[in-house]
Amino acid sequence: MGFDQYHEPAHELPEETRTFARLCASLTEEAEAIGWYEQRLAVERDREAQSIMRDAQGEEFKHFCMDLEFLLRRTPLWREIARGILLREGDIVEQAEEVEEVAVEGAAARGAAVTGSTSLGIGNLSTRSAS
Amino acid sequence: MSHLLREHAPLSETAWRLVEDEARTRLTPALAARKLVDFAGPHGWEYSATNLGRVQPLTDTPYDGVSGAQRRTLPLTELRVSFSVGLDELQNVDRGACDIDLGSLDEAARRLATAENSIVFRGWESVGITGIVQAARHDPIILGEDCARYPRHVAKAVEFLLGAGIDGPYGLALGPETYTRVLETSEHGGYPLLDHLRNILGGPLVWAPGIQGAVVVSLRGGDFLFDCGEDISIGYDHTDAQRVNLYLSESFSFRVVTPEAAVALGEAPATR
Image (cartoon, rainbow over all chains, first blue to last red; front, side, top):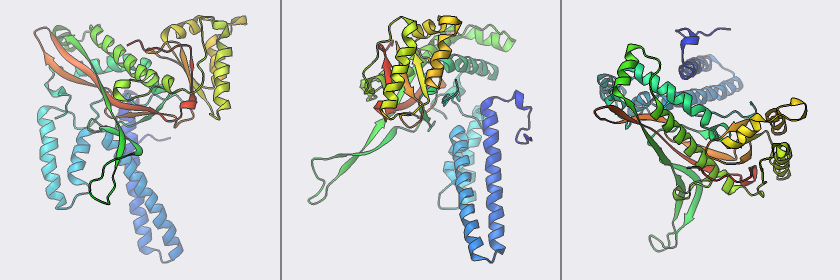
């Protein structure tokens, strides 16, 4: 079983960082799948097969968005940058530069971490059926 | 800049890590409610209210022939507990000391966890939160101090829940005194009472500072909703001549969706 999402020894990483890395890997996989379906749809001539693949690609869109939302919730700075770029009208590059200056460079100047939540990351402690 | 103002605190990275690890270590065993109820979020500090999915009718109208209704929400409650760490101790952290005095933080963590449990189980009228014990529809079962009868009481509570169509597994929140009594008790043949109760419930027994007695809850999900804004975080307040003053804070709401999904065992008054 591979653990390629870890670039540092997994046992040295806090649980929060391991979860973060897993969701980053998942985000990458969903984006890859979206791209693959896009290519398949571009060459497929059978309409029924197209319909199935379009439906499958829709699922990948949903998965990608869920992964992204999770990561943004755990990473306030990333969330701040995303707010300045995503789902907005206007010049993408211009807006990105603007929000980067305000958010990233400002945080770096203060010595703040670029990623990682400011909370203690305790969250859900549900044991459900475990004891 | 985050409202926590952490960048202004005179703590090195090592000191922050130590303080955060200590807070996590102290909070996690005591946050009983989070082990038994549904947890949503964290949604962030800006998140201010939980959608209740209902409207409140309005008696007046904005214009002739036009009616209005106002959405109902449950505002989030902010909790905050102050603590401090000696400036000299923080310098010792960077020298490699591993026996740093974090007693003030430990006490703050105990208070915050106890308050969170108390609000979830006992409610807090001032902020519009009804607790699990307040909402429970079943007659409370008197637990008493005779541990030999506990399996019977817990089985009765499970029977109440099954009778109301509430499926398991079930969890048991035990106030500290009750938990200790259970832990100390072995039944005939030396079988630990803890294991016997766990078998009846099909779920965990949880140490719950902030309640007295005990509460049996269904763990099937969807019955008790903890909506977290900002999860427990450490913020910076100020520095005086001797100490750095920090605080633990969080924001959340809580609501009981299915009052039939819990049974109180004995009294469960708050120990705020």
